Length: 245
Image (cartoon, rainbow, N blue to C red; front, side, top):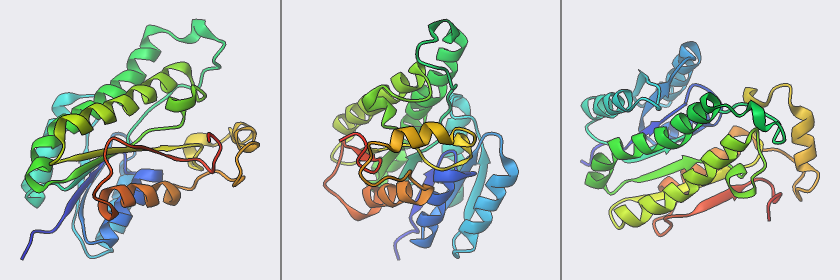
């Protein structure tokens, strides 16, 4: 009997991360639920995963810390025996108008890049040996901000553009054993955008489908890339209702 498949989803306490964790659980995957701050929310995600009849591993780690990431991957292997899918969902930002260049301090740049770019790389690097063993794959939640330069702040856009390039570099480096793809959503209706509904509406003015994404919309594409296709790698799939076409 083949071992149960395993998914590790970073930033899975709420939103897209939770939606992905539950979707994998419904497919029979054991899931490592990662969080950095929202412990109660992460516990709820773990409960929802276990309600699908599969085990969940709850692990607190800041992905911008390489040592914490390595420990998380090691615990996943210890608990479940291996890893089939890594979903890089954890990210951070600062909301800064793009014309306010003086607000973009070194601290802002460093925090965003430490989590969004270096943290994503740390997770990929730590997970790669396990993924190669099982011919698994990586799906990173990027953003259309990395394609259009429009987003919460200039450093955020730049970090996501770098994540898109990282996706291509890793896909080339680790094929054919490991596939590496990304999803680039537009605005997602989560608590991250609470109070910024006017900005979302402005974004959607030129979107043919005229609606923002729900977490489940993004999870649909993550699951497709991870479990329903085998010939896609190095791709950044846009999920924004047609806004950026």
